[in-house]
Every structure is written in structure tokens, then in C-alpha cells.
Length: 459
Image 1 (cartoon, one colour):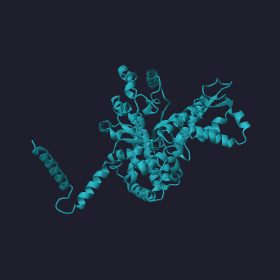
Image 2: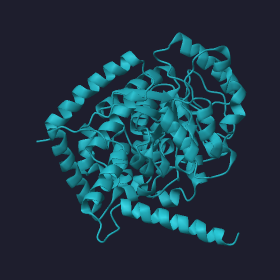
Image 3: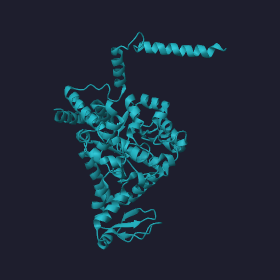
Image 4: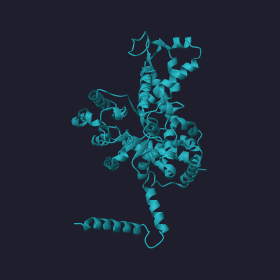
């Protein structure tokens, strides 16, 4: 039995030699043709690697590559910086300005209460009549619209009309600025403000609670929703799929979702559970409620958050496999997907796209340098993927262009090209919840916008 380890090692050595010979290493210097072939094969596997570009598209791709190289070789590389510090550099970037013009298709992972910039909420909504404010013990605020004095809230000061409060302060601009700070995570010094992931998540959830009192007021919500659609439209986004707030009574909410899906099939896209995965229950805990649609023979598409964690081996880390067991249509975030080879393989075979939100993952403490984001590997492997912005207002972003920039320059590195951008934009329509007929219309409309974008920027 003793020779077996030696024989096993010999077999591996022989296999290695065969592979090296196939690659052109044996018999002296490697064959440059074999090297070129390997490089081309690897490049063809990445997202956009098989997209055939027109002559005009190739010119623009070459131009983009040149601009990107200048940023990579410059003194500041935004994807390696926290987004709050990188934002002014991104805004001055020629690559970013081009991406703003690019038709980006759809935003498939955006939360409704972080859709519109907080400056609009404060300067427009809080100046409306009957808007009350109170100040919490956690150094946050709550708002409510009421025709009479609102009932007191636990752990909050007495309600006061904002109109009355503004009349008492010397500088309303300072007050407005402080209100904005309660509605967003954005700060000039994120390292000091958010020393841990728990800190930033607590502040994140506080900002949603603060905004809800403004946005949930029906007259405001109509204006807010229109303003959000307008902001995304101005950023060349054609279509949105929005998510709502956290839910606790899951079975009742699934029942309601089934009803809404039956009543409004062209508006109701599907169902998801949102919130911080690391602190919540795993999907399997809700299996009875989530099995209701299948048991009743009705269709309720799922778009589960799954893998938005950097922990491995905990219950919540199994959400990726559970999401696939429940036939999720897409995977929200999927940050942990590279650590789950079976889930990655199954999602690829089934055509389940990953909704990648680079800025959100960085701001909420999962990765600091976006070159190290797991989606960089998924891009190179051609994993089904869409880019989205999650909670742009909370992060001081708007629309989708900032996240496309971080994906193209940071995640994609120098290997990402115009074909990558084109496939990501097309994916956002292909993997949307639109009906086949509406997808065809959306793709035709997107193509017209894309052709115009190429024509205007490839000279």
C-alpha cells in the first residue's frame, strides 16, 4: 500500500505536464498563438464577452477604455475610496458623464422610501402645512402630518409644528441641513461616523423610520413617487421595480400579495422580505407562509434578498439556497454567492440574475475597496447580473449612474468594456418582471435610445 501516495502524486504530475503541453509550454518557449487563444477564451466568458459591437460601438469602447485608464493611473481612484469621499471625484469623471447619458434600461432593486433625494423631502415636503416633528432619544426625528395635535410617541419629545419651529430659529438653513442629516447616511467623515457595521445599519434603519412619516402621507406619496420616477428618467432609466418596508406578519402579507397580484398583475411584480439579513430570520423560518402560493396553485414571483452578508456558516448564510428552493426570480445582492458554488451553479443554469448594488454594499460595511467586491468575479464568469442602486437617497446618490460607474470602473477593472455595459443594460430588461410582450417593446425602445447614444458619442 505504501507506493500509492507516490503513484497518486505521479498521476497529478503527469496531468499537469499534459495541461502545460496543451497550453504550449512544452518544447521550449510558449507559442504566442496559444497565449492569444487563452486570453480570448477567458475574455469571452465575462459579461459582454460575446457581444458583437458595431464599428461605432468599437470606437466608443476604445474611447471609454482610454478614459478609464486615465482614472486608474490618476492620483485618486474612486472605487477604492468610500463612496461618500469618492462622490466629488466621480462627479468630475468623464467616464461618469458618459454613463449618465447611456440608456441603462431598468433599476430592479430600489426601495421606495429611499427613492428621492432628501433635499427635495426637506425643502418641499417639510414646508407643507400641518407637518409636525418630534425628537427621539436616539438623536433622530419623526414626522407626521395631522390636522390636530398628534398623540405622543414613546421615547420622543412633544410634537411641534415645523412651521412654528422655523419661526423661532434664527437660521432655517441650519435647521433644514440638520433635518437632511436625519434622512440620509451621507457624511463627510464616514470612518468616524460609522466605526462598525452595526453602527451604520442602526443609523440606516433610523433614517427610514424618520422618512416614513413624510412619505407615507398620501398627498406627499403621490408627489414623491412622481419625483422619483422623474429623477430616474432624467438618469436615462426606463423602468423601475420598487420594494417596500420591512414586514413582520409574513403570512398575512403573502396573502395580501397574492390578492394584489391577481388584481393588478401589470403593477404588482412579486414579493420579497427586506431588512438586515444578519439580524433577521432565515427564509426557511418562513417556509410555511412562503409555500402558500404554490399550495394554492397561484403564481407569485419571488425576488428575495439573499446573501447580503459577509458571515459564513450562520443560518442566514443559507438564504441563497433557500431562495433558489422557493424558485426566486432574482437574487437581491448575492454578496455571498461566490462562497456557495452550488447556489452559483444553480442560479446560472436557471437564469436567476443577481441584483448587484455596489455602493450599498460598500456603505453598509461589506467591502471597502470595490475592486475586491465578489461581483468582480461574477462579472468575469458571465454570471447573470443586473446593476441597481438599492437606496440611492440614503447614500447621497441619485438614479443609477453612480452604481454603473462603480461597477464599470471598480468591479469590471480594465477588462470591462462597452459590451459589458451593453449586456448589463439589456439584462435589466431581460430579467425584469415585465410580460414577454412588454419586454419586446422595452427592448425595442432601449435599442433606439442606445443607437442614438452611440451615434452622439462615438465621433
